[in-house]
Image 1: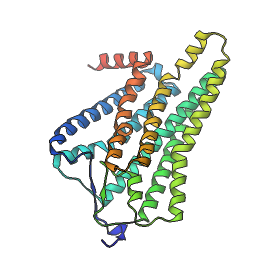
Image 2 (image 1 turned 45 degrees about the horizontal axis):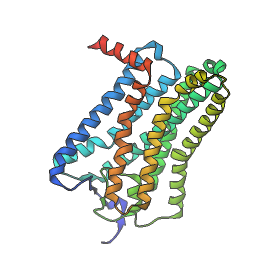
Image 3 (image 1 turned 90 degrees about the horizontal axis):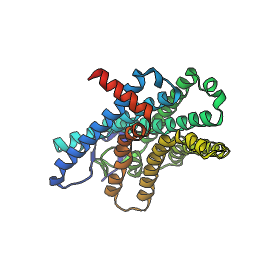
Length: 309
């Protein structure tokens, strides 16, 4: 096949998770139920936080924004997959593929940055408790979320502009259930030094810097907690970080696991199956992690449900 410029490509083909026709009804039911649980669970957290004045604090403000980002992150990929299974079609237009990839990068990066912001909030609460209300004022809440959003938009558009300059084969097949950015880059006919630099820069902003910020925050948190004389005080201080730490480990642990497995695996289809963990399972589990470990959230949810049902 003769390679041609990306503008000549009219559509891509998403290979999905399995070619077995007998497995398609099961996949349809599984992902539809997981998607509904994800949306309803995160939406319930948003409604509980906004409806309860006791939860109008920095931690829960960031949590509601994280839930909103999780809904967007999951909605970028799963509805398209569900429709493809139902219609027996794996075609996605060129514009649709780039749009999906752009939103995937946007919400994925926003998730990462919001987790970093939440780590900073815990750092201030534990290491500087007397100045917490002064430092974490409502203006700073909004500023941190807006900065995270603008950085995510910048990363998404930078990655999009890089992909637009690459050359692809016509009628390209993507061994995934969505337009994964790494898959698109691997399918490029040509790679330039500039594109590689941009890719590393995007990876640093969306991955390395947030992880570094989280590690630094928890290093300071652990150092501060170890100076607490009583074991009860240490447990109480660290328990406020339990849910956030669990979500961080789940998000970055699964993402890093998929990245490492893709580096040594020769099967792109197996990589697609593994990526289900951080694209679907992690956003679905976040509401359960925060609600099960947090009495305030559980009380707010019950009050909201009792008031509206």
